[in-house]
Amino acid sequence: MNRKLIFQMLIFAGLLLLMALPAKSQIIKGEIIAGFNLSQVDGDEVYGYKKGGLQLGLGAMIPIADKWDISIETLYNEKGAIEKAQYPMQADSTTGEYKLYLNYLEVPVLIHFTDKEFITVGAGFSWGRLVSAKEFEHGRQTITNAVNGVYDPNDFNVLIDLRMRLYKQLKINFRYQYSLAKIREREYSSSQGSTWKRNQYNNLLTFRLVYMFNEERSQRNIKAPKL
Image (cartoon, rainbow, N blue to C red):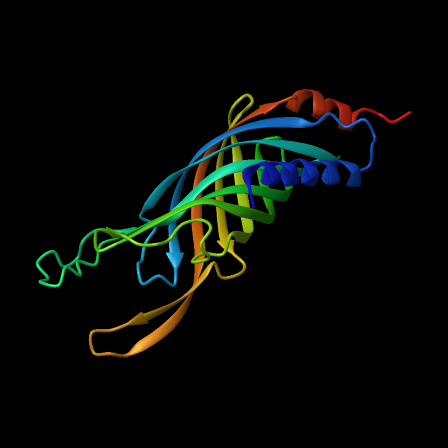
């Protein structure tokens, strides 16, 4: 799938969401999003949230009732895994070093509840499309890329979201997400000749700053008496 088609799908998804909501003159709240990921891939024999990455994007929050919103975002999201060399003196060069870079274009859709205009909790789902992939084992690059089928090009996730007001329209945001379906099935082997298979899943912690637009106007509008 080329990038032009991906962007067309994102626009279509946004239009569907807007059409599905009641058109009662909501004032949509805009979002500018910048964050930092700590990620791992469950099932890859590497452990810990050691892989850093960026999360950047734009979003819209649409009021559906007092204190309730639905949001849709378009994100560039860097995931993967990393492990430093564990056995640097091995004669066969199996150092245990591992690096995996999985970069996605992602569309999360969440429902949010805001309490006292300070803390917001949310949950939802996302669809991600793999746009680039690189993998290094024992310091050497493998054949892995975004289009050769080593990793599933689609990543469906469940999300939990918590955000608090930091200053005026600026909010600090914590998000956890996990793959609902495997992104890869891989067979491993030991030096004794035994083999085993493991399914792999993205596992991600994100710390974000979210700057909101039209938040006060939207709150006044939804609380105004209906004529």
